[in-house]
Length: 312
Image (cartoon, rainbow, N blue to C red; front, side, top):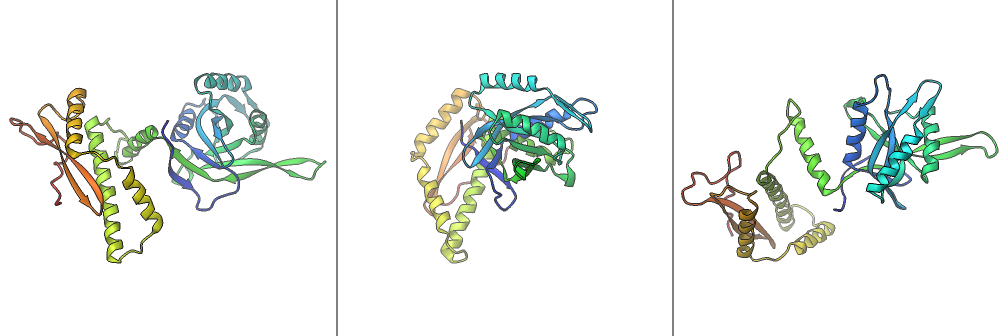
């Protein structure tokens, strides 16, 4: 499984306690369960699954748990929660109960009772709230850990301490997140799936933009406009050393061979060739799709024109 990368972090200062790392699929599942809630239900609760270590709690999955609550009492279907967890363990044995979630912003007296149940199922479970009402035009997500408070031997209470929340993703999840993000600019909130070649084109354009940023930074450092940062320099050096060394002609032959076999690349009238440039020690391979004789177009419909040759 690919390593998780960070999307963003909630809050500028680290809070005490473990960092809660939440994956996009968890948030999507919570929102879906809220949309499908029973008529008249004020909020939805559920079990959080994932892994823990000394410094963080990573939430990778979840499922909703039926419950009923009124002003005076709350009833949770504990048997359903246990059965669902047993089923999840058969699929992913590494995921354990790490806490529970509830939609809304508030921590109520009922939340304390529900948290007591999860305290018997997991060590130091977290409680995560998801504001599905979108107060402030955003879905605030907060996480807490409980600790006892009061005088020993007397009536004890529970205090919920906020934790730092980070949104992380696997490479496969990032594809879905990027696709969902594109719907924000569409009035009907929908977007069609892209072809393999279109995805390669988008990735190539993103890579070209990143390389332009790196090259501009290098030029600014050499010209004295920007003070050199050793941390950035080491990161770029590590990045360059990770690029596999391969002859451009060999790479071009492998690329065209793979395209002809898979049939998912350019049209049969297309042929791919490479341009190789070197700037500030960074080698760049540019893929150009050109037509075979007899074809009328040098690129696919709806695609940008091929990248022009850059000066050596």
